[in-house]
Image 1: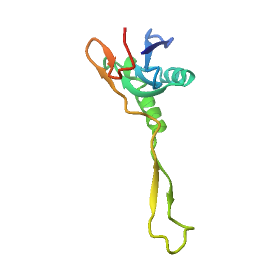
Image 2: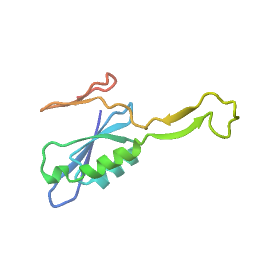
Image 3: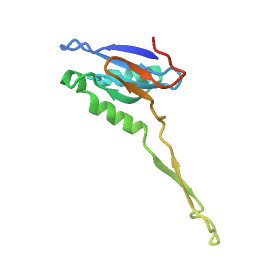
Image 4: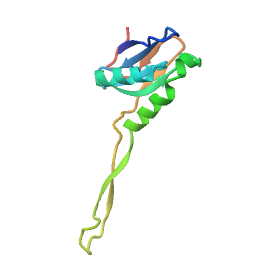
Length: 127
């Protein structure tokens, strides 16, 4: 598990955190008030943020949630990529299949308790 601390440089004196799996490149944003910095660091490191975690509900911790969640949804869009057996196929074509592309995110396997954050991935160890 990799923990990246991000200084927001704001009047609230906050830090944001990214917790990433070195095996999958998936990351969790913790208290992402400065969503732009969180997204930029994740991009620089080659990580994909798959989850948001807030330690509590004050604005200086949840203020960037909507923007990070919107970025997560944009990177995991499922869309039809085409079809097999449609036009310009011949008139005797009997079968047609619509193709779907899966989103880029894998199923995150993180578990939160009141004192620790752990990964259920046996390849990730926490210290």
